[in-house]
Image 1 (tube, rainbow, N blue to C red):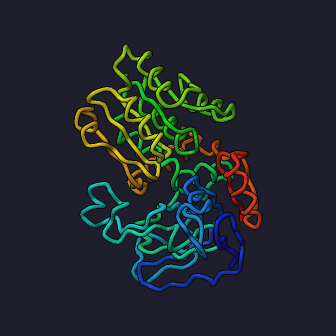
Image 2 (cartoon, rainbow, N blue to C red):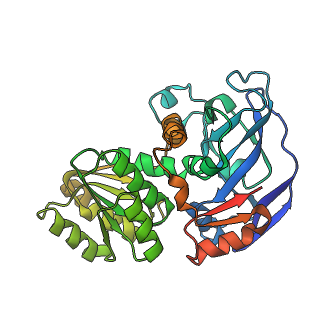
Length: 340
């Protein structure tokens, strides 16, 4: 099969990879019908994580082609959406709603690589969710978004305790930040303030529900948020970047007693203990337990109540994955969908 491999910094290649096969009885093999490039893929692409000869991709929709002897909820031919973290969905941690920390958790990006024609999905019963039927092509991009960025933005909003009547600040205008805007709107936020300097992303943020779009960053953004909230700060803040600067901006934008949901992969983020102590805020985040939200999100998409697939602004065939990575790295695209 054909699949994307990172051979070194900014060296993306599409090569012949070995076809996956059933190894454990809880496995399923899926034929991938759509996949994409994630903002988190850019960290190793830029050399930040020193990855070489790394299979790439962790967002996917597909069709089951083979199942192991112990798979009970799936059959060959089922259309499915999968989480970017493998989980059994039955252990004590999964049952508490944190499938991304399952006792069997592994990141699809590091071990499976779904920017490919096929994939072996361990613990298929716990990782894959069937769609209600064969999806119309027009909603496939939205189902693909549910596999990670929508589920991650949704988790960020839930972790930030977004709800009716609240003011929400969103730090980050990439795909996850935009999905956080969509989630905040769906969860009933009254005011949604977004930090963005890109006209196309600003427009999409407004379409997803942002009430205020600010070009300011850092302390200037914090000052604006406080100006809008009688000096208090936002009730809820979504941090969707993962840098020291973005985290500081998020932490300072929230009011005392407020909540920060942080889902940007942290790079060089440090929080002085004394500042954290005196801020009196709630911090909750990490790799999103997307599997917790998949059934609900698939339902909303299926019923055409949300359209997160609008976040894809460039579609390329799998063989042109290298161009997709360049486009996202150079900010010519927000999120790239790869067709097979």
